[in-house]
Amino acid sequence: MAFEPQLVYQTLASAPIVPVFYHPDAEVTCQIIKACYDGGIRAFEFTNRGENAKEVFKVLRDFISTNYPKMALGIGTVFNALQAEEFIALGADFVVQPCTTMDVAEVCKAQNIAWMPGAMTVSEVYNATLLGAEIVKVFPGNVVGSGFVKALKGPLPKVKVMVTGGVEPTPESLKEWFSAGVSAVGIGSQLFPKAVVEAGNFEEIAQKINTLLTYYQTLAPTA
Image (cartoon, rainbow, N blue to C red):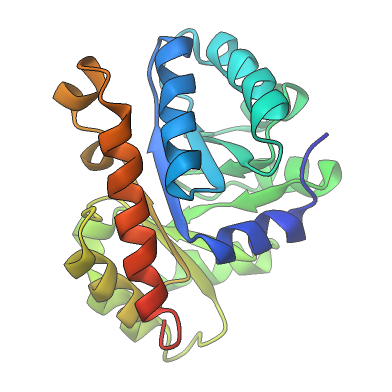
């Protein structure tokens, strides 16, 4: 059973680093999920970027439901209502977009699923909130920069932002973004170096995540 939207947001607030990951091998992805959970992650975004994404997602849904029921599993890189409907039917707890589309907003609202649309201008962020977004994904972060988020908070102080794209898995990068006012960060390939994944060194990934979340706690009072 899917998380209620507010539970997704609460889960994200407690551990505001979201791994953004795709791999065509379900077993590898399950090991990544285990490493993330062991490191303290409680919300995981699997991206819809391969021909067998739905097949892998089915395996992940069963794996998480059986082993890590307190972890929210989301689907990313969703562009249209059909994709949203398919993955929600497979058990997605939240839907993440690189853009903002009304049809996906409507599907998520009708299905009572947390929706995190993508935006990179003030107008896009504002329009996403008008469509019901409680958290807006600012993407790509390395293009707009942390200064954009800080400026955005001037006219839109209550908007909650998750930034993805270019966030480094380092204390310095976390400090930069959370000090700018983001509520969460999504970290992709840099959190999962190809050599580390291929070597099966998942413990290294878990340790890296734990280090980042521990550091985040030192920022939390002012983040």
